[in-house]
Amino acid sequence: MRFNRVVGMTALAVTAGGRPGTGPGALLALFRAGPPLTRAEVMTVTGLSRSTVNQRIDLLVQSGMIVDRQPDVVLGRGRGRPAGSFTLNTDRGVLLVCDIGATAMRAAVCDVSGEILHDRSVATDVTLGPTTVLVSTDGLFTELLALAGRSPDEVLGIALSVPGPVDHEQATVVSPPIMTGWDRFDLRGWFEPTYSCPLLLEKDATAMAWGEYRSHYPDSDTMLMLKLGTGVGAGIIAGGRIHRGADGAAGDIGHTQTFEAGEDGGPVCRCGNTGCVEARAGGWAMIRDLVAQGREISSVDELVDRIRTADPVAVALARTAGRVLGVALAETVSILNPRVIVVGGQLAEAEEQIFAGLREMIYSRSLPLATRRLELHRSRLDERAGSVGLALLLADHIFDPERIDAALLA
Image (cartoon, rainbow, N blue to C red; front, top):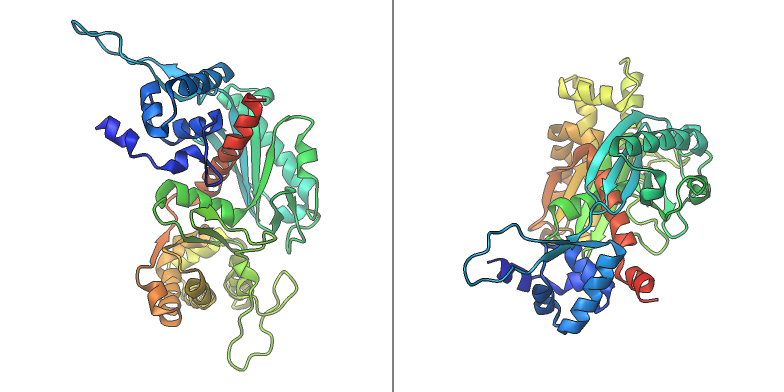
């Protein structure tokens, strides 16, 4: 049975960028993707010769990236010692990630497989600027490393996510609507004095999308992640890969504009435009409308409590927000044809009210073929979705087959 599982592994585990790979990086991808493998099993899966497999595995062992896991068995009469199997060395180093939101952030220390070892969540205010927020991030990283018994020298990479548009390649925030002072801030330079490692920056909804996709929907190669919290955002998985668009702006559904019949402009958004989806359906907008109707409320958590305890005004706003979001998503569903829509963020806890409007508008306004097998689910990772996605993205970056080949075959 085990042999059949190994033979049945897809070629994806041993490719780089869709091209067949034969270097040590491709073999490392195989060890990352599946169970421990013997040398003979690696030969069967890859089709490589015994000498090539031995050379590649020896390089990976010497680098500390994989370890030889000898089987614990009792030898029977007439049998030699069973072949050892190799697996990813998850103790080689650690990863640091921080999912920075508008009003809270969650930091985590992870092993090199992307598994969270320890995490912490604290309140924050992203509008206070990068220095204030990153000082808190630094403090969390120090605390988490101490809990894991690790030092800054053992950190192999850092990944951050933020609630705004990002230049993924340059790891900078670009003209964010609410992140005062973050535009083009040198995040890599901030961390360089303490951590000598790569730093990745991702949009929060995209990180969540990758976490949900890899953890729970790997067979749904087209997926949309809708984040509903203080603001509104979306992350897109297309063809099993993150879709960021030509310049990283894909998925910014919160700042698309919607207008009601006879309406001139609509409510003013935090970005300065009028009629944005977020200005109608974001947590901050619903708080604004509740306060205007005499409710004393100041946070999204309080908003969710009022919805769940059947405050009639809050419930009505939630249902309206669901319909606004559904209208905004309907065109996206027709164009992208996702298999799954996952809804996360604080407002996902009010799923009974929000989801009703979403379903109503999506199924009535999208193409019938696009909704024939469409599934709508609440996030299964909840508040950890961003952290999990960041850890997996970072591990993929560090162990990219071409990068490993360049390091070991130079």
